[in-house]
Image (cartoon, rainbow, N blue to C red; front, side, top):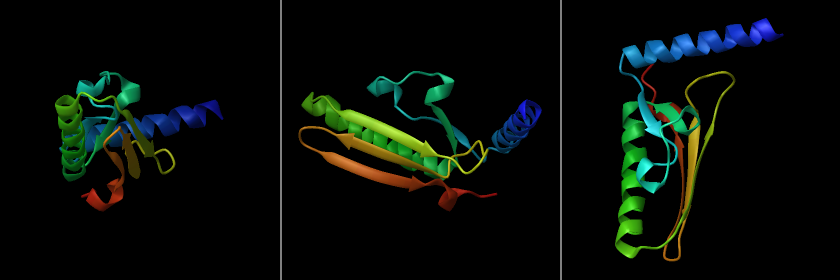
Length: 114
């Protein structure tokens, strides 16, 4: 079973590299850097460009709200994957603060161009 797992991971990595080389995916941070996220593999997802743009817009709106009000927030971005795909099929973003409450699911599959 271990060798199957390694093979599956190698195929997923090859698929991701192919998508990256064709500019069909962009690097995104689950927890934005400006909100305390880190540039480490567990905080990175690869999304189609249009989906990445929407995620960035959501994150920018949250960042602006936090910086203008100074309030503390709870932020989560949870990806779901289909099998061994390196690209999530969706990401559910939830942000809660004293003056706002946002929950949005980005259906990544809707933005795939492959």
